[in-house]
Length: 207
Image (cartoon, rainbow, N blue to C red; front, side, top):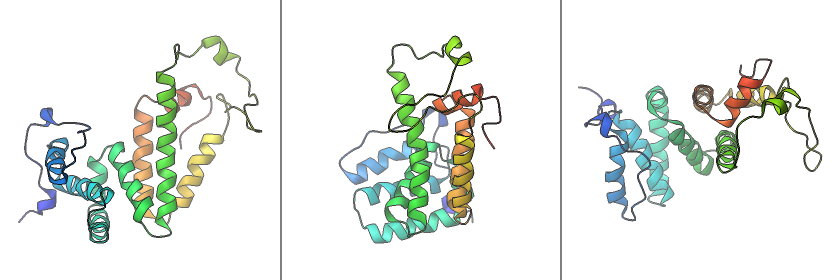
């Protein structure tokens, strides 16, 4: 008999919803959320349902145990089918309710994605956000604020060092390392502020 957690949620994937708005009634909200996972294995929906219950302070101890168990048993399935939004939500939940080792490491991954999200949001509200070719060619590292300098867009190693340190810190928490590498791959393949800088960089930006 097939594992029920691996059964695909029925429906037309073309009708899959995204970012379902919060409904105050928990059960109604969970039912509405199922439409976000049409065509995906049920385990992903179950993990998200647990995240929502935990956020709403619904039987936190037991739901955290079940959440942790599902992550451990279905890691690869979850990584194959979860988008970055829910990978970050998984890390948020670990940062709130994980053990002393997992909490700070999960928070590093959350902060990494939030950094990109904040910068992309800022760029989206600027009047002119296209890259100025002259400024790019003539770019020099300049002081910014409180002793900081701008990132050297041509050959600086700040990003490579950050990614190296993240992977090194995460190496003995395999689940979080796998989540980070999946997110990193999504960053590489999509339009965002970090990937824009990667295209300018003269030396390898990614590992």
